[in-house]
Amino acid sequence: MTEPKRRRLGCARASGIRPRARSRVSSSPVPQTVATAAFARVHRELVDAILEEPADFIYGGTTGALAATAEAARRSGMPFAIDFEDFHAGEHAAPDGDLSNALGAQVMQWSAEGAAFVTAGSEAIAAACRDELGIAAIAIHNVFPLPARAPVRRAIDRGRSPFSVCWFSQTIGPDRGLDDVVRALGATDRPASLNLRGCPAAGYMERLAALARTAAPRVALRVLSPVAPSLMVAECAAFDVGVAAEPGHVRNNALALSNKATTYPLAGLPVLITDTAGQRPLADDLGAGALRFSPGDHEALAAPARPVDDGCGAARAGGRRELARRADALALGSRARTRSTGGGRGKGAVVNAHCDHRGPMPAGAPRLYGGIERVVAMLVAGLVRRGHDVTLIAHPDSRTPAPLVPYGFRRIAAGTSRTRELTQIAGALLALRSRGRHHP
Image (cartoon, rainbow, N blue to C red; front, side):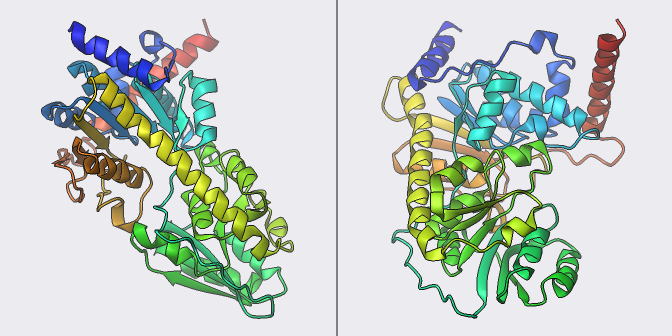
């Protein structure tokens, strides 16, 4: 028992990062076993899957894998790291989301305790982790691979030809700022095309087209099919400008840095970007490559854009700086693992699970696109290329160069879900605690 503890502490020192999540587990309103099971339906199955695979280092993230990564590491005495792609203490709007947010905060704190290092999806998420939860985290931004060749500088037609705007996501749907983009393009004095890459939500394109007919009759809407991650940057380079219109409608969204915002600069495109806490640092870095507007302010978005040609060089430079930051941060995992095991090559487990548990990882991303899945896939591929023995615990349909341990869970009929029962217990305990605070 002594040796695993010494290795874990040594890993924390080697990384230069000491996550300092406040020790609130003993005073938590919900018992930790209840909180973790209520927050992630496959928690127990993931813990078992991790423990079945010998490893020297475990790195896990997303809602379903956070607590499982920490619990398995503590039970086995292995060093571990945690990734907060999202700020789970603010993913849902109040008041309906108060319970989920409270459970998220508790799980985040518990999972980060003793971690060799913690990564976050943006600088704003890292700051919220530090200021509100006492967790020290390093920002790793979500970007697509940099192409082998630099984007070709395109000649922008400043005549009356349609102005081409691009946007992408897994789902084309509401709460993504697209209504504001349509209204803004309709307020300009030239025709335009809004090119949306992704899978439309049922009925959404019909509603967006109806808005375009009334507010932007000169704007053509086009739906493009998803493409492989390796092609995304090149595909974006075919347009004039990219849109990263995160609405900031919930706390996590306001803190997040859209992977759209980090992709367009790699293609040499200027970015129309909402001025949210999560995206502001990148906009500062891009300088002339970023045109900011406040969420919902389509009139500001429709204001005369800065010369597109002037923004391309700044956008490309910002994209390369972003890639360098990501590479430096991902290297922490390899350095921490190597130092904790005394150097040389070793084994590691990388854990990934979404709250809906449907997303496979085909060489990097589910359904041709993803967030943390892509970062995890790049990390796994890089460690394998360097000769490390890596095991990936993820969706059964994932494709990876490392051995895959598929996770699964029992199908539970509606109305008998243990998650629902545990959530109700957690809600009751939180309510009792709140009542005791206000009525001693």
